[in-house]
Length: 423
Image (tube, rainbow, N blue to C red; front, side, top):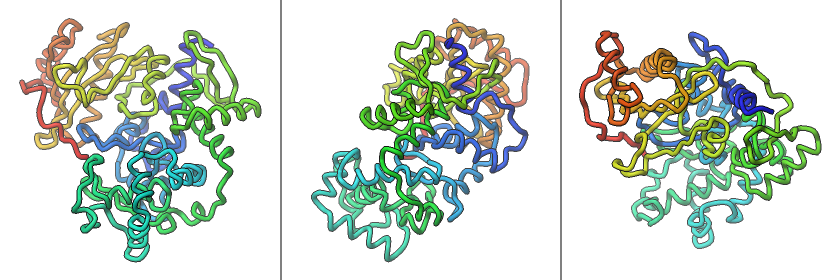
């Protein structure tokens, strides 16, 4: 299989290349979750919460309240929070297939060492918090006033917060909703999840792991063993056994992809598009690129998030989104939502090797305008940055400003400022 064909298969499987509708409905939002199985959650809010952006990338401007209802909308919710690919929103029908992970967490396996140690040292304390939720109803960590006063050393979490997180990982509590500030509110699964999910039988771990790999294969289209395992963060031992079983059953097809150093596996139901029509800004936490070695292998695109890199050492910027054009990643932009001033700030822009600036310019401008509209921001502000002029970006910014387009301007402002993080 050629590398270009593999790239198009991967994009189609991940939901790119389909025509956007003018007003995406709740059904369109739900279909994205059906296709991907899960969406990673991250609290960084420089632009928008990480789990919101993948839907914009595929659908364009949509009503985020639709995703809230799918995630936290009572007993008919279609998503629940758990550890999938990191903290994730996951289709509720997959909850039984993650119970093996919950069982292991109760035994202290596959979870943070500090949480396992807390359970070993203070089981009565944790059981008491579970009983408090059972008796009094849903609560957030800050509701545990007595437990919350004493700060632990583990990321500054209180003992109460750590106990709640152990119960969450063990599947004894789940997320009922999120409060303003993104605080998780915990409750018993039987009071949150649909009854048919709670009462569903628990599959054997081997079958559950096979099902998770099926979901990964459907979302990725063509992938290496590591790609498939990484989707739900499965161990090599679990992932390889499940993969071998699926190959033997004919549910995954071994293939060779030109330029890939490791064997690949194809979803037999994958689409083979001859062309991908896409123009999308992609979140760093999108399934398309979250496994960085896969992004480099599929797109020739080396990406590292630089949030924790000192400002003077950053190569591309603080919160950088790749821009997908057709079946290639054509540029990357450091973006920030200046909510107080109502502006979408483009702090830096870099065109990728091999991309044509003239081909990138117009679709990128349209996508930035759509992003600003979705975020409720009145204008897109382009900043000419050092290192961009050699690619023509600085001249581009002056051209846009001179054209007097309503949504675009280019005043001077500093690159560094309040990062608007909500942890």
